Image 1 (cartoon, rainbow, N blue to C red):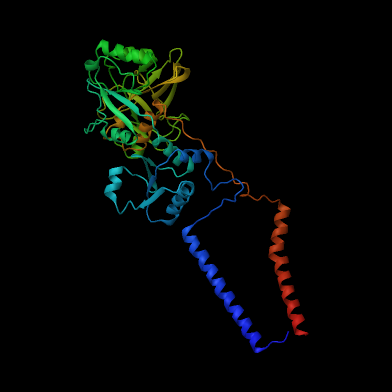
Image 2 (cartoon, rainbow, N blue to C red):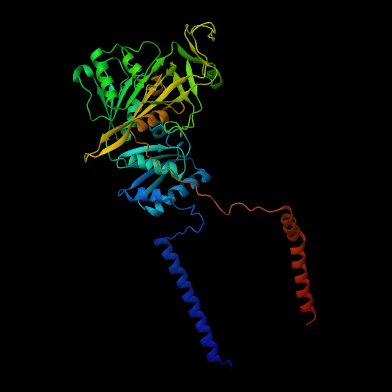
Length: 457
């Protein structure tokens, strides 16, 4: 083909039009990326996508979810949080994520009780929950708890010097009560001397350290509530059972004399030996997700011989270096083998369950489970000690489990099928020799061949 000046100008024009069209296409694609996004998970196990359980839960949440991450300006932690929340945002775009530097807003951090860098505050429909574990299972279960529609009513027995669930005194449960209300739980007090009955619409009755003796009629009402399948949280203290001996007999509970003393407290910088420390927990729904130490001041040890029909499981057990101190706490305190003192480990908390039958709203018979927890201490939930270790986590687990709000999602961990490459010794030698010698020699030989061929043209 003969190149003429007109042909050359035509080719130049074609090249110019091609460059302009290419630039316009690149610009259009760049603009589209600002308006639309598309991501695909091509991993064999789908480990970067939400599980079916999480997606089904998000389908039941029509309103926006607000997640506040209290994380310092460290890119590694914040990137991990973005990746986790991003999985949910890709499926539910109205999930909002906000980062707050805890060092820049200490007052808010203190008010909300944030204790860990990277802690999340998950809020939905006016309810909120804090989350310290960063994972799909933990976040999905948190969403599941705060989306609970059925109102839970918890009644605290009053009229005998019990701990006030909304009180501000050091020994009261006011701070704990605020956390429960934030989770949509309705709190109230119940004075049996005024009402002479236990309402049938409460989900849980709490007896928190009655200081004065209950009347026989009140004890009969509580015993009747237990016999009829009511859920109960009973927090006792060392000493007299203030008239609740029939309740202890019904559950097969014996409160051992004395106060638990733990010699391990000095290792944690606690001078007062009358603290029971619990670092390990059984695989029970109450305690399986607690990883922090819990502290119980002035606790009593319990022994249980569960009556027929009841299943009693110890959920809180002290360390070996603990014992029940019967004598005074003045001066040097040590275990006396010649007395009624008991050497640890000691059980201070038991979970009771027994099957029960009832009828649902349609009159159909359904199977259920009655739940009772007895703990030999009430101070661990008080305003003075609630913030110690994992006390608040234990308290929330107690209320959720006793309210039958333990229908948590168990998400199977996604295995990464292509993460490990196993080679025999021979394979390793061949690959190592190939990369160290064969491949460099091939590159060198091809280079010399090309040079020699061009030189002889």
